Image (cartoon, rainbow, N blue to C red; front, top):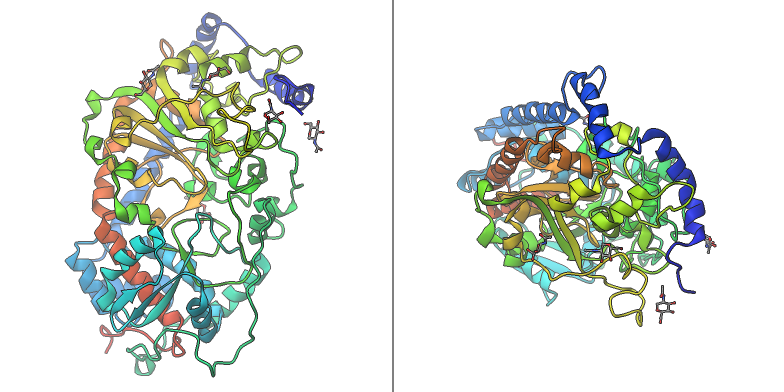
Length: 604
Ligand SMILES: *[C@@H]1O[C@H](CO)[C@@H](O)[C@H](O)[C@H]1NC(C)=O
Ligand SMILES: *[C@@H]1O[C@H](CO)[C@@H](O)[C@H](O)[C@H]1NC(C)=O
Ligand SMILES: *[C@@H]1O[C@H](CO)[C@@H](O)[C@H](O)[C@H]1NC(C)=O
Ligand SMILES: *[C@@H]1O[C@H](CO)[C@@H](O)[C@H](O)[C@H]1NC(C)=O
Ligand SMILES: *[C@@H]1O[C@H](CO)[C@@H](O)[C@H](O)[C@H]1NC(C)=O
């Protein structure tokens, strides 16, 4: 059935939204607008606000958060071990002295919370018998094995080869162990919240700083699995292939959370209503808690706003807790994070190294984005729910003009995005499209049609999107602003963006190894996954002619601070220091003696 350009079904769906919008927005000419805005501006449009603009407050808070983080850096192994015991509730693992010496040799900054992700990922395994973890790892389809200080794999898969190279850089410091690796882009585990609570309780019961005399400082049995005599049930892992991944993912949320309680959307033919008002991670229209913004348990509308929840490329997921390592995951997944292979590999297409040092002043004051219409399998019946489609459409002045001129009664437009409520972003011009048009250069390079035979392009999205040639990353760095939008999973460009002299504007649901090292609004600009704040962010930095000055120097400062910080804590050396810490902890949690294993060199 062909999709009409303006289906009445969409009209019916949109009408309430547009009526709502009309009540809060002021459909006026730009001229009428500025006269209306100036008195508002003088009196500060955010009543009761200490800061003139909400983003000023968020930046000030980020400065403080960052200062506090730096102040927790330690300088000696004794201090680092003390911080460790305080934060982790256990002794550091055997091999800690080697780890510490390695970190020092690599000139790594030691702030204990930099490794929070390691503990977040491994803690539940303290609730699983070590023999079971070893057996599961030893049997997994894709593995790296360390034996006698040598890492090896039988796999030719390119991600695995890259990870092998990374692990080889620290192999001589590792005990024997097996690493199960995820070969897919998508994460592999969602242990239901109720079960996870049990595992965490058991883990908590084992957590203690044991008396120094009882501590054993050497790993015991080789941390490898599959011994014949080990008891335990022989049950094959059950893999689910449910394409509607929201149903799997939300099981990781608490039973009383909005994600678990909200009605499940199964019909994605209508554009979603995306309202960021009153969400716990937002304050006055902008992201105030980036970590929380990547958690979807309080954001049930994201089930119809993110391709991964609607129809990922592939799903193979289990509810069992298996020791599977991967490069990124959603908040509800239980995979163990390693630095992603593309970060380790530093290919030009992900780093754009050649252009990464262009001086700020030499760049265009505009935003660029190029990418493929990924996010999952986009189809005629679901593409409205895909984040990249939404983002590209929001930056198409023609579509934006259509949306803005649509009068609620006669001419609603079938676009995959809602207009942000003007009341929430009072600094923005109306209409937006003439202002936005020269500021962004954003398009798809491929429409990635999931339905074969719909080519050329993709007949259901062709009316809305024109593809343009891809722009190498080095050339993208000629623009000051770099929005970064999730594809099928995390965006492999992010590290390259951070290392550059341009400013990354990041909207993501994916967690990565480096999250605890970065401070939003200090090293990058966070954006809500609905993108309702996108125009407000551009308005803040680029200004609104005649109404509001831009803050180019603030943008430049965040870009440079992010670059400096990436050169300090996101180097390949830092990845190795992370991996060595992670694998020593992993070797302990799979050891029969794990509860008494530790390093107490500073206490003896
Ligand atoms: C797209 O092409 C397919 C295959 O020819 C056809 O079945 C479908 O109706 C077309 N859709 C639109 C919106 O034109
Ligand atoms: C999906 O929703 C639209 C209204 O937006 C409706 O016309 C259509 O019949 C629904 N499809 C299914 C399969 O229920
Ligand atoms: C951000 O949210 C997390 C929960 O995900 C919470 O633990 C943390 O305290 C919050 N941070 C701030 C600064 O409110
Ligand atoms: C957008 O960027 C491309 C690639 O750099 C360039 O060729 C094109 O002229 C730009 N478009 C506009 C409208 O500036
Ligand atoms: C912008 O939207 C118009 C109208 O739907 C469409 O024809 C055009 O191809 C779009 N441009 C881009 C760059 O996607």
